[in-house]
Image (cartoon, rainbow, N blue to C red; front, side, top):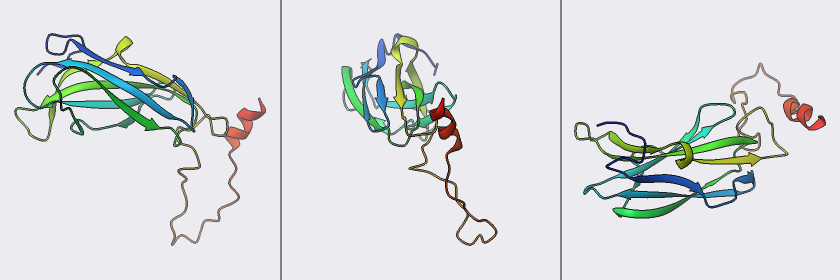
Amino acid sequence: MCCCVNPNERCPLLRTYAVSKPMLTSDDVFEFAVEYQYDEPGDFYLAISMNDIRRGGITYDTGAKVFKMKRHGHHTVHFQVPLDLFNSGEFRLFTSLRTPSATNPDFTDMVAVATGDNACSFVIRNDKGDPYALLNHDHIRIAPAPQETDVEVETFSDTFSEFFHKQ
């Protein structure tokens, strides 16, 4: 199957848009919606990836066969993502509409992907966090393994955050 952007003959509408305000803090939950038009019979799925625009890379991906849609035709479905894991950043959500692969039941074929104006951008501002790293220290830290005796952990200091907050 061909990987196509939308609109296309099989999926004339696929767009992702903010329901919440697009400028948020890490204390917020971001709500967004996906509007689609898909009239072909059979199973189909929505897959959503969250890309970090500033740092680059895919921050999160739902997987291709997680959100199985129940209704064909023109519909809108709502999703949300908690933001407390993240430091400040600029993000973009890309949604693809997928069907089960005819050759491999473990895979899907992409029918359409929402890009450009049909993708959804949002911004997280976290004044307490580290502007350099994606994930904030309240939720993840690298630490010596429990059996490690050759490492002494000093008091945690967030030098990047301290530097940027003095500016």
